[in-house]
Each structure stands twice: as structure tokens, then as C-alpha cells.
Length: 112
Image (cartoon, rainbow, N blue to C red; front, side):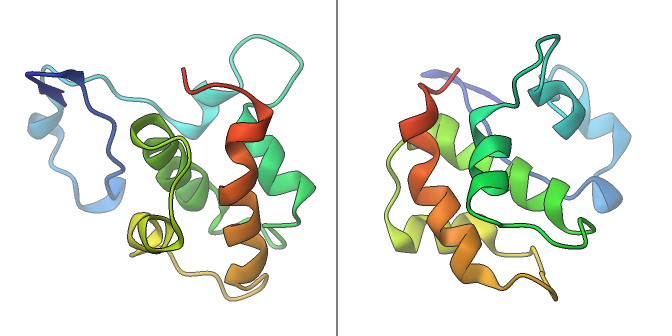
């Protein structure tokens, strides 16, 4: 969404978001993050390196929540990470690996 400070990234649940509410917004999907290059986005790479995914069902939601957090707060606290991940449910990996990945993201590059 656009604010007085510029573009503000926030994750939303696509399954309950009304299409009309997206008018005038900048939508970023998990498929967009990789871009045209061979390398994964820093958020995706951190999840791979820290084993933050197993079955993959929940991974897009975690990736996008962490991306939105990273765009606002490149070096988040545990509380900020936990708040950003609210609404995402993992039944396989557990949250410890995801928390480690979240803390490591900034070491992979700058938010952009």
C-alpha cells in the first residue's frame, strides 16, 4: 500500500482478499521474488539454507510474510518475526528453523 513514506509492504491472505481492494496496489507474489536470474531471492535462500521448509505447502505464505517484514525491518527482533508470521501454520518443519532463517535474511543482501 502507499503511505506518506512511500510504498509499504504487507502480507495478505490471498484467499480472503477481495479483488477490488487491490486496485492501485503493487502486488508481489512468491513467483516474482526470484526474478529472471538463476539465484533465489535472499528470503528464499535463507529458508533453503536453514531448512525452513519440508512439505512446501506452507512455504509461500512464510516466504511472503518474511519478505514483507524484511522490506520494512531488515533486522527484526524475535517479537517482530513472530508477529509477521501470525496466520501461517507449519505442521512439518517447526518454527525454530524458520526463525533462524528470518534472522539470517539480511546477511544475504539488502532489502529491495
